[in-house]
Length: 383
Image (cartoon, rainbow, N blue to C red):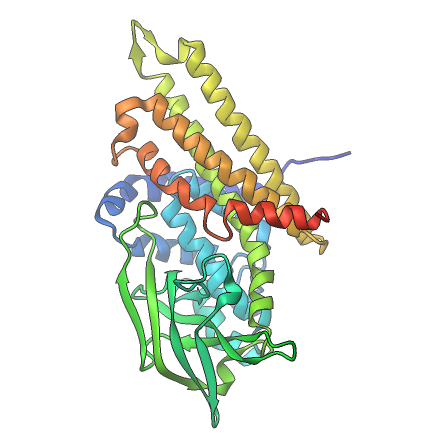
């Protein structure tokens, strides 16, 4: 018999994060979003709660949980604000997870305790201006010089890369040529403040205004050979495995935004009057909200299944792509419908719905575009 109910520990975590999002994030995030300020106090509180350490072992400062626990936290945060949720998602799956998964014991002991408590943030430098979804088009290089690596190049759209607490960026760089003539790409940890490593000014973005995003440049950046993360020449493959997990996390975040739209519209339908009645009395509004709930519910089931297969150690690439595609579509469609229900108020930035609308589009782009997800699904089906 199939039982989709959450276990006691998962439900307790979900309720804790739900309360935190309502009590701590909701009252302040609107003003921070308008100013484009990074939510340092919120991040510190999440660190003390252990959210940044959820899927990591206690030996290295984590909470001893799993990736599904992280997904539940992301969904609840994104019901209120996606900037906060993506800061957690990127800090865990892109900042700390590569070190947890591929780092040496020395690298884990050096970095993970700080990353698990949000005393520090990590970032992953993959995307380049000319690459986008084609990560194999990496142009950044790392050349061995004695015992060191010397890195030259640039990265674009890197989350959590320029905050006051950013401690490292893991950079993918071409380190040689494969026997078949292709690029040999490796991952190398570059600590913040390394000479030649420069963080550009923050981007002016459509959404995610409280999330930190920068362009990075590397000019003769010299780091020890021991900063290599994982096997030489395996940096791209390592990232792809991390990306599959990240798609499940982004799906959870997308579900949170989609559900947040339902939450706001339900509240508004019981408050707003038009033509002498609450708008919730009109079938047009009822049907629109019903469609929104269907999308959020269906997308949640998709990411639950992908997460379940991941935790069982089964192949889940197709399920992760399906979850990410379905959930990001649900987020975008729900944000559009919510804005329509709110009318002029939904077009105001101070409205949560206005933030949701601005934040939704990137979910169809980041961690692999919708077109990439369709390509992965079709390829897995053998076409």
